[in-house]
Length: 559
Image (tube, rainbow, N blue to C red; front, top):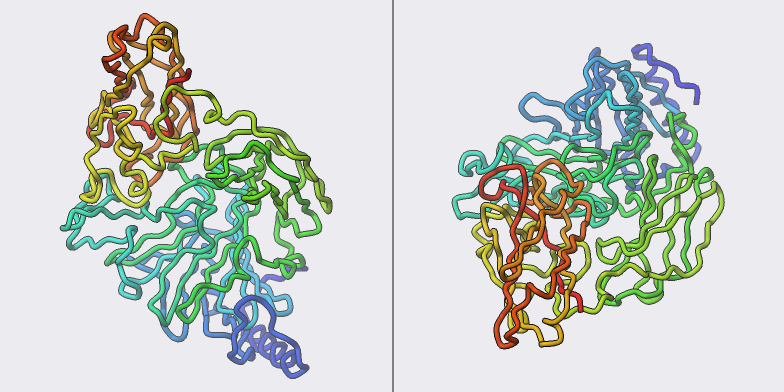
């Protein structure tokens, strides 16, 4: 498409209206997800002197500032939804002075925002109540990569775990975690979802729905299990996010390039059309828009695996592809392990098979445009659960699932009234994994004890103790004692440097610590309990739930 900058004259508006009217008169179809029933004669754009005003020809009119590229208005069925505290919707916290142009190609209007090396796009399609967005970030000149839709207060209820009321709730951590009068906690971090768990996020009144439909995150960082804030709402307004790279809980370096489309979608209260979901969306209409960095379907390939052997049927398996430029993933069939990952950018990728969220196989695969790379059956050989153990607490799956408070911690603070006490010594043979705390902090429940007995033969030999963690906080890592024996302090693993355990995320870089416990450490009286104590070691300091801590995956003593 030869993009033409708007001359901001009324004749462009009239030309767009005439073109749309002629198309309808000729029997042209209004195509695309959620095509509206309203007359497309209104489809077009104008300039109010400060903003480009885009009428989708359905029930949505939105404005984009031609000074800085902010989304300054979202009017759906006559109601303004955009804005709170005088703030607009925009990339990051607003780009500032930018070069903004607008053009129309058939039934698509495209706004292009250029700010230094960053390019952002808005698109409208005739007859749809959607705004399509792309962001192309080329370097670190913009620190994070997110888009936030700021929504006026009072339009949707404040009843979710990521919603709070500043008039009644009290800040208990930083400026973003609140406790309500009933002792439950709320935060913008508490959406409780991994990237692969959701297609969209938003709100509904029953008669109006406002949604952010996420992109495929191919240029994001963190993989399919990444957790980040998705939305927030309080008495002052709300926000919907598409976050591709954020400073919190980040496990990878950021990736650069064009990401999208992600979609702001309005509905009559229901979920957005499934045709908008990243795994379903047909973006062939965008091929002719001239988006910088765009790769259409013909320039992509597919990876397909015949199967995965050595799986544990109790767990889902995910196959991830990652390199410095992109990431993709797919779910393996529960019965055969077959997987297919479509729409992959060409390149060579590290392929990881995840049991739950724990990597149990790593290989390499090369993807070619227009072709399918077929892989023979992959044999899982690195599952720690296959090792013979004298005893094991929890399951090796890369998460604290099954431990005390684990399920609550993706949408609540550890101090939440709904959390059970973080204490909980464990006796092998009589205690359940659900009685052992999911998290251990230096200043909260340090020195948790595991009691166990050994046979004479077992006590006569050295054994390897393993403790797996899914993440830590401020360099926390487990140091152990067994009866009178003390382990050395392990080196700190590479984990996110920000808050983790208190902001709804146990996701980090899974690490297994091993301790060679000598035979001399065991009690010789087989009727007595040996006592393992787990401490959190760190050179960093903090208090309570912001003291050094770890999230536990599994603990076992090998035979």
